Length: 237
Image (cartoon, rainbow, N blue to C red):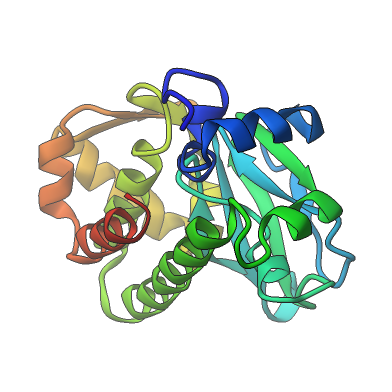
C-alpha cells in the first residue's frame, strides 16, 4: 500500500490499493487543482469518470424548487466523487450537483479505468463497495440531522467534518454558502456563528473560518458527527 506521506496516499481509498496495482494505475490517473465552487458533476450529464480528493472538500447538493439547493453529503480525502458510477449509473441524477466548497487537489480516474479496476476481484472493488455503504449512511444521517437538530448543532457538525478533511485550522467559508448547504436563512447561520465565536470555539472574519477550540466545538455538536465518523472508520479504516 502507498505511504500516507506519498501524494496518492493522501486519499484513504487510494491508500488501500496494493502498491503494485497503484504503480500500474498511476500513468492513467490525472491530478487536477480545484477552485471554489468548481462543478465536477452537473444534473443529467454523462459520467465520464470519478474523482478522489487529495485535499479540499466537495459538496453533493440536491436542487429543489426555484433552483435552491441543500447539501446531502460531503466528500474529502476519505472518499470518492462518483458513487453512482459504481452502482451502475451512466448519467448523473437530474437534481444533483457535485461542487467544490473547499479548494484543493484531486485525482481523476477515467470511466474505462474505473470500470476495469472496480469490477469484482479488482483492486478497487472491496474498498469502494465499503465506502459506498459509508457514503449512503452519511446521507441518511444528514437527512435526519437536518430535520431534528438545531442550526447551531448542524453548523458545528459541518465545521467538524470539514476540519477533518483540511490541513490546519483555517479554511474559506461564507455565511451565504453555508446557509445554502444547511438549507436555512443566512441570518440563522450568522446568529449561530456569533454564538460559537462568543463561546471561543471558532473565529470568523472576511470569509475565513478558524477552529480555535476543537474540543469545545465537539461539545456544541449533536451526536451525528460522531456517528458518521465512527461509521467511516469502521468501514474504510
